[in-house]
Image 1 (cartoon, rainbow, N blue to C red):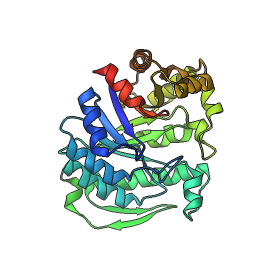
Image 2 (spheres, rainbow, N blue to C red):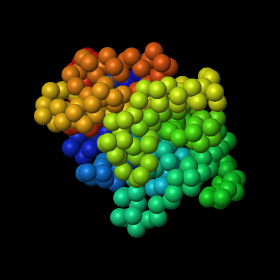
Image 3 (cartoon, one colour):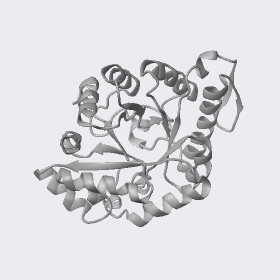
Length: 292
């Protein structure tokens, strides 16, 4: 099973973060696409470029480019540049977008859930057509695009990855892409922010049900999982463990050996890749020490 480390904070230099993750034995590095949540986030494309040039082995991907921020054409164009820069190690990860506060505070409209999901599907169809044919003629409910054939799009094959959570996205997004990443905590972010109380109630049965639904659509597609972790021994870790309790998400909080064992155990239920994001600063470094 692969482990990917996700960059979410300006407190880490992207190149240093990626080199450290590569040295520790992580299989890939990613970068989230937010303006800010609690703090300023690193810019996704700038950071991925720095991470690509600082590493030699690890795969690279956005986690995930926010479809509400970016044009599908921009995403495809940037993906072509990233694949070239990374020497074939890049995967194009696109997500629907979920943080309402960023949208409203920066003067944008925040679509409702069904609209976001349908925009997302249309964007993925556009990106897939661009990356596989080099052109696009798309007339949808949310996007209109007429792009002439541009040979640069098809020069290097790029895997297309999508984040899925609800039943509609599982059914309608899974057939389009090369890999899916499950957001089992999706109902904890459905209101436009992360609800820790809801996250504490997420169960393993929910994960198993999501896996089954994906397999019902496409039995052969690789499945990843997005996880939030708190690793180490400190008062913030203790507080997080108390908040999440003994539920599914609480498995990924605590001593490094425990967290790593619980992450690797996910392979037994069909998860081939786990992406880890810090809830407590320093957690990825602590986990990396256990991997190496």
